[in-house]
Amino acid sequence: MEKAVILKRGKEESLQRFHPWIFSGAIQRIEGKPEEGDVVTVYTNDHKFIARGHVQVGSIAVRVLTFNDEPIDQTFWNRRIATAYDLRERTGISSREDNNTYRLVHGEGDNLPGLIVDIYGDTAVMQAHSVGMHVCRMEIAKAMQEVLGDKLKNIYYKSDTTLPYKADINKDNGYLLGGNAGNISTEYGLKFHIDWLRGQKTGFFVDQRENRSLLEKYAKGRKLLNMFCYTGGFSIYALRGGAEIVHSVDSSSKAIDLTNANVEINFPGDARHTAYAEDAFDFLDRMGNNYNLIILDPPAFAKHRDSLRNALIGYRRLNAKAIEKIQPGGILFTFSCSQVVSKENFRTAVFTAAAMAKRNVRILHQLTQPADHPVSIYHPEGEYLKGLVLYVE
Ligand code: SAH
Image (cartoon, rainbow, N blue to C red):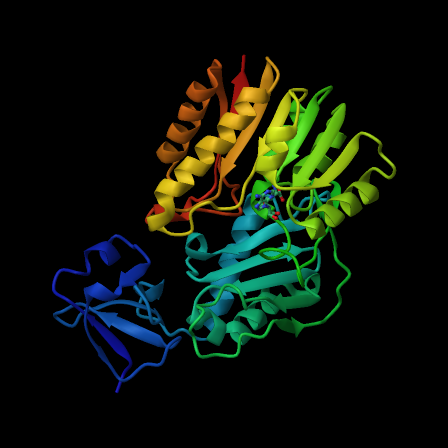
């Protein structure tokens, strides 16, 4: 019997608009006893084909792979990865001389819900967020080799923290190809140590590339504070941009070690930079008011909708502290990477923070994620990174 999901009457509407998720409440019945991670065919209540995708236990029951009646086989994966690579070629990010760091697959934005792939030189780091992508990891790895050829020497699979906690599968991390941990990658001419074995996410926050590049243009002669610096991305661009001093802060001492190492390979012995392993809120409380460029790039304060309220209080507090202490004429780069915090939510939180700090604030730029993190127009939830560049009088 075919593994199939039959929808309740009328529940195909969002799929007709190419939304890639089917919630468990939309399902009338499941046939053929699929296991978690299997490919299922989705039918409307009157038995018309509507989609094919990966089934999973949870509120998102099916993640759609295709709206065409086609098999999910090696040819399918080859085609999808080729399409994703083609987009990076067309936007130019994968073929620049001065850059070999980019996102090859951005989940729903590449019609591959549940899959993330970042490229660091000749290494691809792959993360499955769904059991279905975990099941298909070898086919996906093969497709990447097919598409990237000699450019790809290693594929590291890293899904122990991203797969559903309860799923009954072997979640071990490991190399699917190669095994070389030579891990220096280049972003717009700057070098970064990428620790995909122990680092956060795939080892680097590729999504801030264009925003780091914008920061570089504002850095000249400024006294800069990079809060939540992780491996120092913004700091390294600021040093190249001619900042007078750069202070980097992160609560993780491992992140601070990597920041120092990244300063060292780009600007050896540069006395303009100092890094502090310290809580950001404590640092903001104790620091003086010497900075005239501050970056706030905290981790997602809200992972789920029920923590939205507290997250907004967090953004408000954090931004108020920075706006209060920044020098007149200062520039603030402030971000939220919480998917459940909308652009409007975030802007309201920052607006309230400005009012609390009693400073006159203007918006210079509204920032988001770059083109290698595309957002499907049918899946606006994919737009998770929001940023504002503010001028504080
Ligand atoms: N701006 C970075 C990415 C930031 S990720 C880049 O461009 O690469 C968020 C960072 O915040 C993580 O490195 C995490 O260790 C750090 N962090 C989390 N909570 C913190 C806190 N309370 N104080 C300081 N840093 C914190």
